[in-house]
Image 1 (spheres, rainbow, N blue to C red):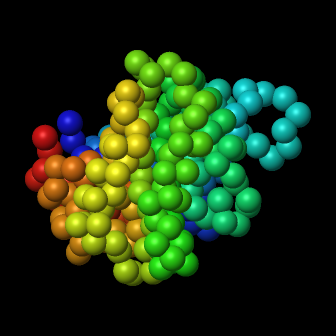
Image 2 (image 1 turned 90 degrees about the vertical axis):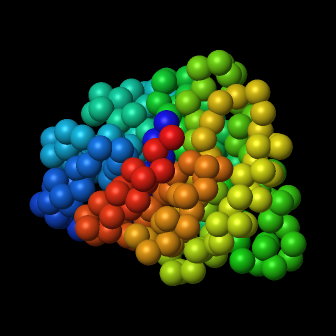
Length: 239
Ligand code: PGA
């Protein structure tokens, strides 16, 4: 099994044209590109090797839910992965663990691979609450899962203080976190990946460890040269 490399473009780039250019330049085997909803279709037409993901989803399939996007709608565009519970949504939009749980369960039921994001703030970490926070996010976030045998799940540990700051967590910390996650979540299949200020300079320090099964890349994924270098590194550690 190869390493998972997920590009989270967040609310970038600004235009369809730029999105198309970035997609064309980033179209490499093994990459999962998660563009903003409005660019998914454009990106889809530009890629043949990379796979498609979305940055969020709603749990209902259709109906009176203004502004939301459903799983069937995403699947119709060829989306195979969906990020759920990113800290930017939890912090800026009040997304709760309960909402995350509904999204995770709906995505997995629909056959889409869910990427559950977890991680603590700097204040929580300094207060020694990292373990408690992560355990709560996992316990509630995965509480609505039913069909465990067909589960397609990725757990992304993204400490909030490491996101977009240029200061990633250490691979050693991440390996301890993987142990904690494995102790907490059993009976279902999943992979654990790291996110937070990953670049081509530090990707290898994470990817060389078998416990770390991939990386979620934000800022650096907006530069195709960067993401291609990260993919090259990942290919060295294909299982
Ligand atoms: P970053 O973002 O790589 O820019 O730190 C990662 C993420 O938020 O998914």
